[in-house]
Image: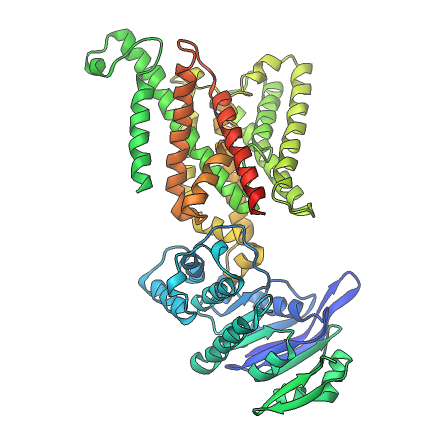
Length: 252
Length: 316
């Protein structure tokens, strides 16, 4: 379990994350939603120790992350930030192999190769594995990065806007993979996501942030209501039930 | 495949390099040298070949490491002020300890080139405009500022002539007793190989490195230290060889990619072949006189550099 205990982060005088406490359940998909500048990405970066909190603490399986060795954490938690603009020419396979760095420190073992193969197969990248990243489409590249995260073989997978710049087909593909990761492999997935309907259809839990504070948290059914969404986004949405899925209509 | 040709070419050119010169030494005489021929062979030809190989290998690898760590294809010891800083260090050593031993010169020059490189990396962090072509221009300006400071102090202390020896790389000055310091670079290449993965991961960005549990700062420091030390050693023994660390890694990157561990050997081979080729060219063009290596590499290298820049534009 990930426990976030009254975490705050200040940029200048502005609290980007303001006294946030939240518990993340194992083996589930938890989505962080909220308007721009709500502090979702910052919170994700704090949980994954990319930036340190000014106050409060984060515990992963009962261990404080600021007291855990970075290399040990890298075997427990993986984060993929948005916009991975690369200037390096790497093949997919090379990139995925770097996911094994926390274990191998550069010297790949048989075990490492097994994980690399699996991750590539899981993301259906076998045919492309020797292509350079700069030859790929946005969707393929995103899949390659997620494959690297899979090869890292961590229990917790954090993704910051994984659907950014993807078309509908690829978005659905990525979300289905995340669902399988939670359901088949028992991974705990945390995502920051803007598309409210993807959050509604694919998550188990939703945490809504606004102005650095938690506005609401709970199961999909608890959060996806007109009233709660109005509190979060300040706009009216009608919620339609289609095929047992809650779809928010907010286009007019 | 390509590696095999490079190795063949390297052996061939090395052989040619040993037997070109004013004093004719032919391969057939190898075992029946007279005293004069043996002396020239062992005190001039062999040291020259060894220093060409080491300089070509280490400068090319340094360039590759720099390009990864700065995440910019156009950053190299020439375009980041590293060489100019090393030269400034040599001048300071000459002024402070008038009869500085080569080792003292090396230490001072190393400290300066390291400081200069770190300063440039800091400037790079602060630049908002991340245009890949803008960065090397800043680096060249930075190098020129340091270079003009060097000239100013050299002028004041009457060391201009002394300093110009380090301005243009020249292998004809390399004789036994004057180049052995270059051997210090050999273990650096080994360290570069051990750290290759770390450099590439660091090149993917700080967040990326942190996620994989890599000590980003350490990788950065080790990388820049390797670059600064090997550049210093080359500048001290041979002089400045411009554009080498820029052209070779970029060509290798085109056909081998940027995974340093895969590309290291190709970079080393191509670097050695390139310098060897330029040196031989410089020795035969106006035979029996010589064109210094700094000039031949500079002309050919800057030509390729312009081509790479134009190509980049076409892509962007």
